[in-house]
Amino acid sequence: MVAISIDRLTKSFGDVVAVDGVSIEVRPGEVLALLGPTGCGKSTLLRLVAGLDQPSGGQVRIDGRPVDQTVARERRVALVFPEQGLYPHLTVEQNIAFPLRAEADPTVDVPARVAEVAEQLGVTDLLRRRPDHLSGGERQRVAIARAIIRRPYVLLLDEPLSNLEAGVRAELRTEVAALARRLAVTTLYVTHDQVEAMTVADRVAVLRRGVLQQVGPPAQIYADPDTLFVAAFVGTPRASLVQAAIVVEGDRVVVDFGTQTLEFARDDPRFASLVTRHTERVTVALRPEALTPVAADTEPEGRPVLRGRVRLVENLGHEAVVHVATGAVPTSVAESRLELPDVGRHLADLLTDSSSSAASHRPDGLPATARTEYGFYPVYDPELPGDPPPAGDVVIRVPAPVLPRVGEALTLAVDPDRLLFFDRAGDRIRLG
Ligand SMILES: Nc1ncnc2c1ncn2[C@@H]1O[C@H](COP(=O)(O)OP(=O)(O)OP(=O)(O)O)[C@@H](O)[C@H]1O
Image (cartoon, rainbow, N blue to C red; front, side):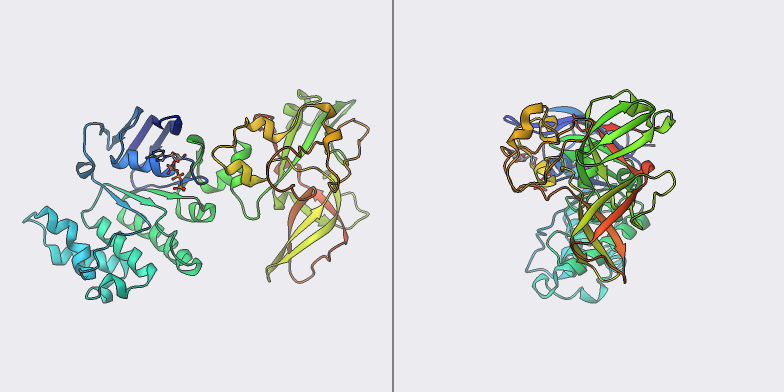
């Protein structure tokens, strides 16, 4: 069963392709988050489903029926924006009732329905107030109540919590998710906030420049990203992205970071997909849980190590986020650059620089990226705009109370099964 079928949907505005051949199927009652940076086409996609815009190509089907010829009002969808146009001169009760009154269906008991949705949204005590006497969170509850009063088949939420202060947002996002499930209403939830997407949704669809990158349950999007963009965009703290070359030598596969290497047995079936990539340039995404501090002189069984020095300790109370300079060179996407819609360069160029002489471009002040015996000079391209990336930091989490100090040497055991490799186009190289 499919509630919303989005089939090769495209929308162009002049030269801008806001939505580029996106196909997604949303199941009945499912909450699907559309996640991506600003300008990636989330709102446009939502507007196409709502019928507020016409697609340049492709089709939307709601409950099995194509809706190309169906105007927004008749699509049984309700749309909630962050800037809620609640009518200031009407009470909460009148605002919530408004869509029903406008419909004037004599079979509907309007007061009973208002009481029901007010109860569901926890705004029963506010019914006599006017919108300017409500907090931002209360206004948003009223807006959602108004949206669901017509019992829509599909609920479309466009950054519904973006104007709210962090505490209220956290509270409301769990409520909204619980409500959508209780009502069993199929919901598309647009957000640029990955934490919001991961906590609210049954599945998350990640968009980049109008192109769908991946759709899957939050845990899968996090642990098994299809693209470097997804790996970089999802996760707090973000994954550390570092350049490496793959070298196959004798009975070993070497992941060469320039100053350090990780080595694996060539005949280990997990690394078969690396064996075929001798001399290839890759990006390795290291999530904090792939790295565990160990005593300096240990060689943990089956786990190679990276060594580094603590550069920064962000103490969060229960744990610290620790930045460790390893001398590796970050993939030259500051992640923020990946998020911009109009970088104007192919992702592959942003990820690694292919010219072997480019090491001479290395500006002063960046880590010495000593040549290893495998001859890999990681490259930082100073021509790219933006701040230089932090010097080869990898980020780990350390539980309180014993925290490392800035300048301290750390040895990090690497969990091979949690390493994420990406080719020059930003596509995942899956290990066996
Ligand atoms: N009516 C329009 N005319 C021209 N270009 C548009 C129009 N609407 C959107 N765009 C462009 O389409 C692209 C996608 O915009 P969209 O609003 O869908 O992105 P978004 O992911 O929702 O971003 P945000 O989170 O900032 O709202 C952007 O480059 C935007 O400038």
